[in-house]
Length: 321
Image (cartoon, rainbow, N blue to C red):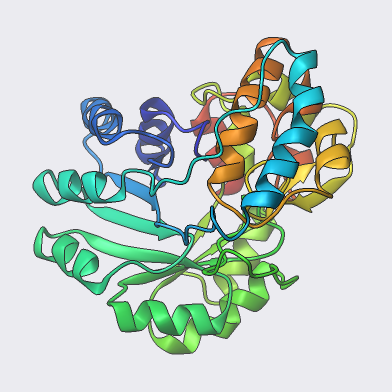
């Protein structure tokens, strides 16, 4: 939900009986702190935050291919009156965010994109915060247990947006959410099932299969409280588009609705994240401002055809009759 998450959305979900997450990916530590404060001001419920884990820096290893991808993006960028960004590597201010979360604890922190030092988990535990990891396989789940996870988020192939594979270059598997769920249940931790939820029957099936809870993302992209750009909302609710798993936008595999950008730039994309994210960001921003979905990252899970605009509380109510 990075890029669409807001304190108002998280608080609305929590007040309606769910647990709203703040997506801290791409935020500075100060911005994350401000959003947490805003969340707390809107609800008396628990606060949950998701962080991106630091990735392997492949800037030198893939320098020539990153340069080639930037050159390929230049023509697309020029059509929107901009240029590709600088393909820098960073760790998404991980240490600064962790320090803030230890000093000003929330109830739950989850990590996506792989492992963190065990000391990070221990620091959060010492602050009274529960810790979860997004996993896409039993192997990743076992590693999360060793790191001290309190819960797992089992992500299936039908989830929208970035796949949570633990290693940057890994090709995502094609396992359905229920298959990933069943593969990790015997580890003894509560499991949140994530991916492809379209209706209450999907929630029921995953709970019956053993999920302690079910995560929903795509349906909330069109909530009144989200900050999803209008062209993205219209793509989710408009005429059907093919879905693809692409790394053209960020260097990490992600599920999106196909558009001109995915068709044109997948061939030169390489597994260098967040380098490619920074390259494409000015183009995506300019396309959104122009109202053109053809150069935007139209993240979408398999249940997106059930997305209906409205308050988050109404969306949640349709999933929990």
